[in-house]
Each structure stands twice: as structure tokens, then as C-alpha cells.
Image (cartoon, rainbow, N blue to C red; front, side):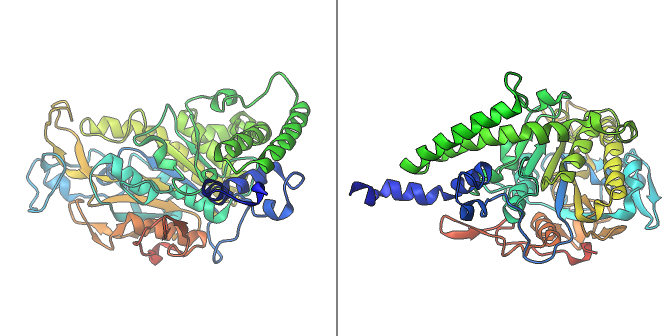
Length: 473
């Protein structure tokens, strides 16, 4: 008779961990769990709320805050005023800044649209007719930590699911043998670490899978991707037996998230031996394609990203500027030139490669950092710029990002900063507006893609955000 009654702890455990069992269902398959459960797999492909233009996302995160006035937002007046105070009374910056600081880089027009792009990004410039440049972005504060979380999770301070988690929650993923959300980040974690790709209160299956792309060997990229002791067939037999034992164990006990996660990891590890080894092995690409992307870490990341989305991964985030971020408080010319040299060719190759494969039209590519930089030079500050006067401070009041493919209006410039490049003044776009527009391109009303938690319905845009319709083709 005791089995017919539940303690409060049993009741909460069985109700609160149901989503973990859904994750288990998609891994164990219909032979081991009921069909009605496996059909509700949290990663099964799902249709959006309405027909979307984009089916997948590649988010290139330029970590550290690249300078918009040196990349995609030319301000010739800075050359005229170089070394002189700007005629502005409201130039509020995080640190002490001085006179106008002209860009050390030349701009030129590209494509039929004639959009001006810095000499730092000639390969990206060649693709400008497929790109919508947003020159009027703005965020909330000029600090890396909250701005990184705002851009990635829609909230600067409190734990919230990342954009990639929301996307896989809404759409699922096509390839059940690979994670739906993968983060490519070389050499370790960025500021705020895994919070940038967290699932927070969403089920853990939607969290981003971190890959250290500093490694070239597939077996080092993903630890233990191959079992050298037994064959795949033997592993399958072992897992089938283990799954039967685990199923019996689960029937006799209340749901346990740790137990379910262990079962998921065994099965996914087995499946990834086939699909992940293939996806991450760029040596299988023709030499001409590898040459197009280049030999560096960024070229390898961009090519891996294309191979992942080609195989059904829903959201791939590519980090750049982790060991040496775009955070140039000093030596801006050398620092920006180095990082652009690392990323320009690979980004251009990614856009061209997606287009020639017919994938750009439904793959949304996003580039940008957490904020921009000041049009004025940063003055020496203890512990900040080593006494050099050749860099820029953080600037959240106005900066640039761009999007390409996925239903975006190519060859288009949206909004503008003031004549000096300090503040967004024409058609300003907050980070919440950007997120709302991204979800719209995927086929979601951002106010209706919600998850019930702690007594309220949460969403990526919280209680904010407006779709920027001019960005959509």
C-alpha cells in the first residue's frame, strides 16, 4: 500500500524532473521507452510558430568590444578633429578619455550597395550585398561581464537561458546524434565562462556544448570520442544491456536528474563517435575549400561551423578574441589589425561557402561584440592602458553589428550613430530588439516563446524588445 502514496519529496521529484526523462527518451529510443514519450523528445525537430526565413544560426562573437568607428561605421570628421576635444557636453565614458582619435584604417565602398567597410575586413566587404549592417546598436552598461550576458542571454545580471538555448528549446534540432547547440571557443572560457551558453532554468539538454577548438586533432577536440578497446558493435551491445538495467532502476525509484544525465551522456557519447568524428574532421574537405578558409584557428572554426550546420546542428557560436580580445585600451591599431587578419578571410569564406551551397538563404550569420569603443582616445589609467595614449575605452551608447543570410535584407545599413560615432541617434536598436528580430527570422513571436519558471513566463527578451522590420527582406 505504501507504493500508492507519495511523500512531498517524491511528488516534487517526479514532477520537477519530468523534462530530464524527456531527454532520456530521445536517447534510449522507442524500444526502451514508450512511443508517446519518445515522440516528445525535447530535441526532436519542431516547427516554429509561423514560417521562418532562417532555420539555423551561426553567431560569431567578437569578444571584447571591437571598435565600430574602425570597422563598419566610418567617421571622417574624426580625422579633421584628431587631437582636439570633441564639441560634445555629454560624452560620458567609463574611464577618462581625451581628444578625438581618428581611425588609423581607411574605408572603401563595396558591392552594388556601396556600403563602406574598413580595410580591416576586405573579404567581408566582398560579401556586403548579403549583409545588413546595424550602425545603431546600444546596450546598458560599459562593462564586459554584464554586457556579455546581455548579448548572449538577454539579461545582464540574473541567470537566464542563452540565446542558443532558447533557439533549441523552440526548434529542437535535426541531427539527434549531435548536440543542438555547440560553442566553439579556443583556449579556454571567456569572461563569465559557461554562463554565456547556459540553459539556466530551461532543461539542461538545451545548454551549449563547449568545444576547445585550439586543438586540431579530433580526439583532442572531443575527449574520449573513440573507444580503442572495443568496437562500435560491442559498445552497442554493452549500452543496450546497460539501458535495460537503467530502465528497471528508473521504474523502481523517483526520477533523479543526475541519474538521467549519466544515462544521456553514455548514449550520446556512443552516437557522437560516428557523427562528431566526421563533422569535426576538416581533413575530409577538399583542399580548395580548406585553402579558402585559411590555416588558422578561426579558419578551422568557421569550416567546422559550416560542417555542423550542414549536419543539422541548430545553433553554433564561434568565439574570437579570447586569449587576446578586441579590448584595445591601447595599441588599437596593432591589436585590431591582428585580430581582423585572423578572422576576415575565414568569415568571408564562410559567407561565400554557405552561399555557393545554397545554405545562406536559410542560415542566419551574426557578427559583433558586446559593445563598441569611444571615438576619443583613452587617457592613461593605473592598471588599464599601461600609460599609452593610442587606444579607445568601452562604449555601450553606440556600436555596430551585422547579420547576413537567413532572410536578412542584404546590402542595407540600418540606423546611425552621431557624427562622431559616440551614441546611436538614428533608429537605435537595443540588444532586446536584436533578439526579437532574430527570433522573428526563425519564425517566433518573441513575446510568445516562453518558459514557465518560478510562477511567471520568461522569455529571451524579458519584457522588452521590438522587431526591427527594416532588417528583414
